[in-house]
Image (cartoon, rainbow, N blue to C red; front, side, top):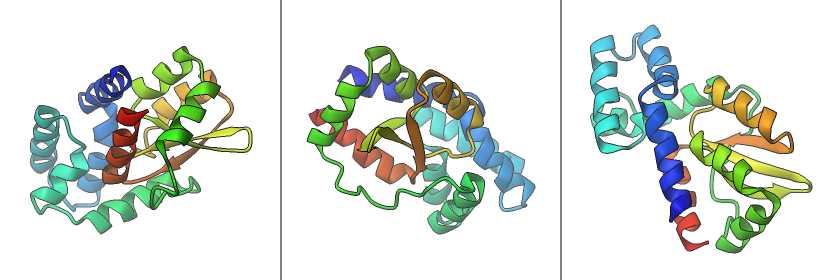
Length: 165
C-alpha cells in the first residue's frame, strides 16, 4: 500500500509541473488544443489525480489513438509496452528483490514502475516518455534499467498488481 501511495504522490508532483506540460505543449503547439483547454485539462487532472491524457480523451478534445501517436513520436526509439506481457504479482515481487528500497522509491516518486526483468536489466514503464528529467534522474540512480512507455490505462493496471504484491 505504501508503494502505491508513493507512486501516486510522484504522479501528483508531476501533475503540478513538467510531466503534464510535455504532452500539453505538443498538443498546443500543433494546434490540436488551445492553451486555455490545456490549462483546464491540467487543473482537472490535478484535482482528480489522474493522467492528463485521460481528461483530454474524456472531454473529447483528442482521441486516445491520437495521444498514443504523439507519445510514440515523443518516445522515439523507446519500446512501447502494448499489453501487460504476462506481468504478474510474482514477477513484481521478483523485481523488488533486485531493487533496494531507495531505488524503488526513486522510481515510484518519478511516476515510473518496474514491470519485469530482461536478463540483468529491469524494465521500467512510464506513461510520459517525453519526461527527460525523470528519466535522467532514474538512469543516474539505477543504471541497469531499460525504459518502455505505455498508455496510462495499462500503467494503472500494472499498479493494481502492485497492490497484490
